Amino acid sequence: MIRFIKQKAMLSVVTACLLAFYSCSSGNDTSGPVTPDSTPTDPTTPPTSTRYDEQYRPLIHYTPVKNWINDPNGMVYVDGVWHLFYQYNPYGADWGNMSWGHATSTDLFHWKEQQVAITKDALGDIFSGSAVVDINNMAGFGSNAVVALYTSNGDHQQQSISYSIDGCKSFTSYSGNPVISNTDKADFRDPKVFWDETSGQWVMSLARGWTYAVDFYGSKDLKSWTFLSSFNAASYSGCNHGQWECPDLVRFSLNGKYVWVLIVNINPGGPILGSGTMYFVGDWDGKTFTATHQDYPMWMDTGMDNYAGVTWSNAPDGRKVLIGWMNNWSYAGSSPVTPWRSAMTLPREMGLTERNGVKMLTSKVVKEIDGIGGTWKDVTSELGLSQPYQLHIDIPAISKGKIVLSNSHDEEFEMEIIPAANLFISKRTSKSGKTDFSGSFVQPSMKSAIYDDNGNLSLDIYVDLSSIELFNQNGLLVQTNTVYPTSIYNKVTLDGISATMKVRPLDNIWK
Image 1 (cartoon, rainbow, N blue to C red):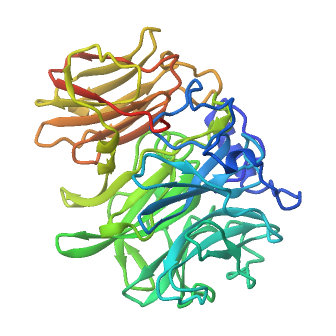
Image 2 (spheres, rainbow, N blue to C red; image 1 turned 180 degrees about the vertical axis):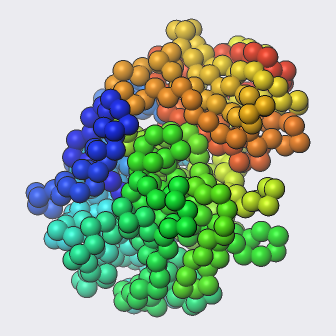
């Protein structure tokens, strides 16, 4: 969870790197404990000036009524409710006063903003972390207590816990905090915790920032923690850059065996510029994570705007559901939106597959999207929509060409397919809409491998008022990008490509 005092538009990659460095080494807020602005704490009666209809306001993505958000935190599923916590500034639309905001949903799309859950205390700001359901009362707070684990950011970064015994309506800080003290590690944060059946204990992953490492700790009671091991990418030189943050160790089943994936968010040093999410595939023996020798880094998303994503705890049916912060530290502080700042990605169902001997993560929008989906209709060019939509394109024989989304203001977002080079390239140029708020926002060459299916390519493109999320059918080609057109792209043009297309509208989640 990167600490920015003030984010400015950056004019070069060098400037972005310098800003990231300084933002991670300074910026402790020295004011007293925050008293959150009362306005966003009761979203059932939002301010009359906020009707969720502002220019660029996402209509199918979560945003708070107002103010700054970044990393999703503490996501946990409890009694039929998906709880989304997140880094939040109760006071304004810039980074600061880090607290845990809170929203709830029963379908992963219609969100209700709740009271600010956890705010600054004597140990410092409340940085990123996770939450678990303590079914067997191992911590002693009560059966089925929800225990939140987070980084207290004061003079040092230490790990603390708070607990809820009323279904996340309120949290109580544990009197024995911090549960993992620290006086010498500069970057030591973002605890992600899960129950490990292999070793019969809770396991915590902790990011180690600029040391390019993740530390693992174990506990029987969520209060007393023992260091287990540390993972670093010394064997994979391409991964030793940027600041490592927001880790998540996740178990998948593949070909009848368990395979573990360590998700690591880094900034700067993403697949293009600034923020990005890489992952390692390997084995976990209850103490140590060992990566399989593959061609690292491997990227979860090759667009610019999916960062700090981690999975929900206690999700039903063993589902691996992930959500990310839909922004990039290269320009997050200057994005041209108000009165809120930033959104979450669409929630994704994560999976694992093997392709040409390489184990790879897959991402697809969760099945609950059908609950806001309208009727499909075939299209050739004009979409006839002024609301968010899902565009499905089937390309039965991949050929070199372009897919262009555009609107009546001559704004466009172009995607190019180059089969000979096995490249899919998205182009966010100065023609995409508003771009002058940051010198880093224009990105005319966001590349991915095509990952075709026997020469065929099937794409699902989710378009909101200020974002485009693209997935191919097998979930290997994934790109998330924010855009700021004057109006939603409502026309699609194919150049050199033979394809069939259909579209369905997606309901406004705020109505």
